[in-house]
Image (cartoon, rainbow, N blue to C red; front, side, top):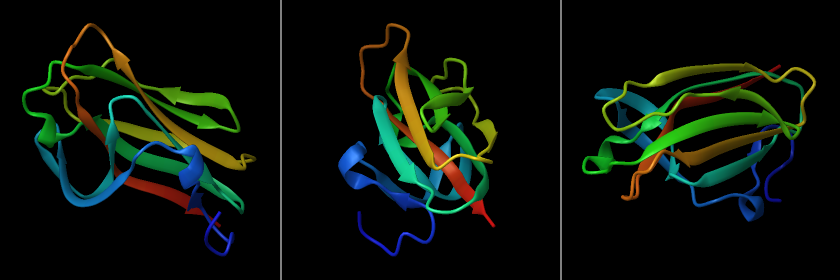
Length: 133
């Protein structure tokens, strides 16, 4: 793992492809920053310190205009699911995520396909923040 291990770090060797972006759009709403991933993905983050919460707005990214895919987002702490969205498609607005990370050492952000869509999609964790003390 790269970095000083003093705060949250992306574990690239355990994670799917990640595109860190600024000015991304989800559900017609623009966000300042976030990460974009494929519609089947897993992003591992080592917290490396006491962290209190994870927050984001999630949904199908505006770059996926022609997709028929639906996806479901999940947040895991130390391998236990802490939150899951319903099925979301391109026309759905962003869904708020607020999860406590108290007592957890790892965070995993997962996206899975939901439904019968055949076309690929990009999805985003917009305004994603891990809050640490």
